[in-house]
Image (cartoon, rainbow, N blue to C red):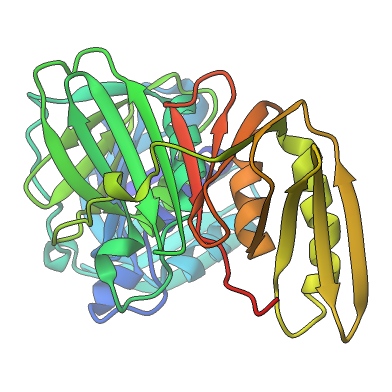
Length: 379
């Protein structure tokens, strides 16, 4: 195998596939990057068993400066070491050549490296997913859905199914839900072209976070295909595979209350600012708790840490309807939830001191829901 390529163009693709490579793997060959040189271009592959990324540099792409002198394949490891070498090379272009089956030379201007590769024939095969029933999603919308729901994914492996985002597609609508049993985030959107499709799957939250890092804002759409235990996200030159989590996701619909005794409409960023200031004290104390009070047509945020001090802040509300209410909560949960809304008006729906409370956009209350379980306090 021998090829010459533009270094910046190659590095961009190399960093994409590196997202899937773990420095520690029970399968040693997966700590490396697989390279295949063919008449069409260079294929780069990285995998950690949970996710796999395959991308392609086309010889027809003038910016790549790619010249294939000899076809072949090799695995270079560790991936970080190979990336560091390419990153530090002195010239705009560099050449990779495999000699003596796996020994690989990397040359650029006056610099030359010789590293030992691995036989690419031993690299695990990527899943074969039929794209006949694929559908497309706008990239900016997919990234927004992930950002809005991944905050509620569990980080504890005691219940593996909760470390994922539950996606269902029915009647032309996609519903994404995540919960760690203390909070819940749900987004529902219509998707054209899925009217005849029905899916129920759970994608690891970590996989979707890596996907958002891979997706460039210049991309408009991404193709999605689903197999029995894998999902594929496909752009023009990149394939992103993720395994699916096994098991039944809990029925979260029953957790979302359909009524409330108190409703407060206000600007999300106003409430976020107040909670951020209150949490300055709660983080310094032993108990990370902030209280929200609705009384006499006013909203007050209180943070009280006996070791540090106390903060009280009146929050400007657009409207208040219903009973007086006091509710205590983890401010980090509410801050994360408020951040996902952006600069919009929201409605805070409260039931009782110990029942979960809900935040929804004032404009469209069924499209996006954030739910938080309150904290029981002695006072």
